[in-house]
Image 1 (cartoon, one colour):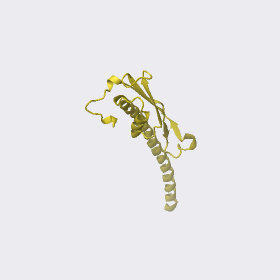
Image 2: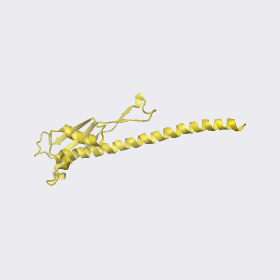
Image 3: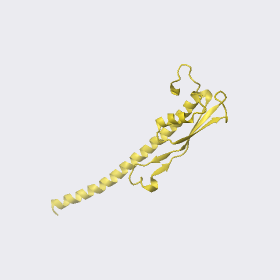
Image 4: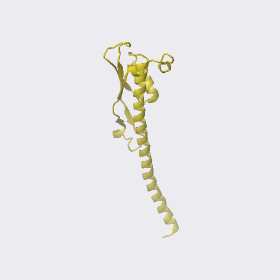
Length: 144
C-alpha cells in the first residue's frame, strides 16, 4: 500500500474514535449537570425553609419560591407546609418546604431525544423548626 491510502484510513479511524470520545464527554457533562441540579435543589429547599422561618411569613409562598428560584431557576412549584396546620406566625412550630416537580433536561443529542427529553427528579424536602432559626434582631438581610 502506498502512503496516500494509509492517510485516508487514519482519518477514518480518527473520526470513529472522535465520535466515541465526544459521546463519553457529553455523557460525563450531562451527568455532572444532573449532580449539580440535585445539589442545588437540596440547597434551594434549605434556603426556602430558612427564609420562611426567619421572615415569619406563613402566607407568601411566592416569595419563598422566588428565593428558591434564585438558586435553581428550573423550580416550577413548591409545597409550603407549616406545622401545626393553620397556625399563625406566632404559633407555628416549623415549616416543611418541598419541591413538588423538578425535571432534569438533557443536553446530549442522543439522550435529548423526545423519549428522554426530561427526567423527573425525586422530591426534595426540608423541615426546619422555628427554634433553630429565630429572626436576628440585628439583621433582617434574608427577608429583603
